[in-house]
Image 1 (cartoon, helix red, strand yellow):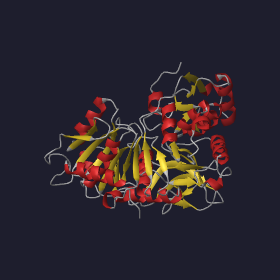
Image 2 (cartoon, rainbow, N blue to C red):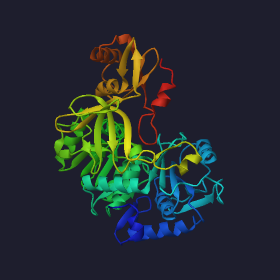
Image 3 (cartoon, rainbow, N blue to C red):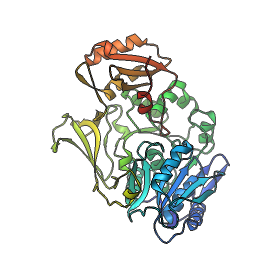
Image 4 (tube, rainbow, N blue to C red):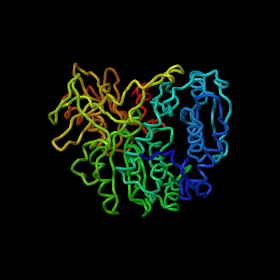
Length: 465
């Protein structure tokens, strides 16, 4: 099995990271030396909890790898999050060390409130903590063992066929499970990653991708929706880029087909994927050769994983029968943590994850997701699936759907050629609900979490006009 941490034991002179901002390539042995040296600053007499406040820089990667090499459990957090939110987590979990980046290249460590053995002691298995929300706003973490990280990186590298020639541009933060999986899978495969300080909407991002010959780009649905509207993928994607990957939510099938056709024109591939932080990132994928036929699906389970559909406690064995998606695999988390004492807990999941997603499988064994068990609303006495409504409405541009109590609110990004009333009536006809059950509200941009996913909680708190 490959491991992203193998470079610490078997470093080579091959590239590992490209610091685009400084124009420097870090070889695997240079990165290993820096991580090992930093680990010395974290030496203690027992395993501790380390908070690593991450940015899009080399220092964050060194801090992450160094904490693991020192034998500690590391929580990866957003360095740009509000100070009071981060401090609330520090007060709640009492880390022994807090790692930051002052210059983007060298991690800085300061003692936390749990230093000198006064904080909670992590279990021997616990290696990584990731926020369930992709931000530091939630005190709930996913507890991951090193074997979870290794298994996920190994599976991703296998089905994506990542080898030492690949070079991803790190378009997603490493404190987000999808972004971390990009880094881990490439380090595990002996490949390299480009770190750039620029947003995907900036021309400098794509200039860095071209200069450093990036071969792949990872994005969430909103990323691709915006890139498609601006035309940046067609105009700025470098010739070296032959792979696009998509996860982090459902991309409408028509968008999948357009991206598939775009990559086909350049002899490239689009990989549509499905996952959850609770599975260390990845659960299933759609092989490019199955597109466009299977554009509406989440594909097949990753290597060494198994997906099934369950109703109550019974597994469904017939195709096209709905139920909850259940995943089993070595990348399933140990469990959740909501306060420091939970860090000592053992593995309570035992390799099985109830995803909370509703779906089914077809005659070819390809799975599809139809909604969330909790994204259900009742309007005019009828139960409606908010994800299905959102998917239907999104054919006319980016839309986020929330339960407004008396109405279902469709928050739509301005610029659509369809009027709000027409959209409301179309959705109502589609789902057999009176159009008065819906409200369409325009917004300049949808609020996003740092992971790039829509922040539904923020929208739900807003008053729709």
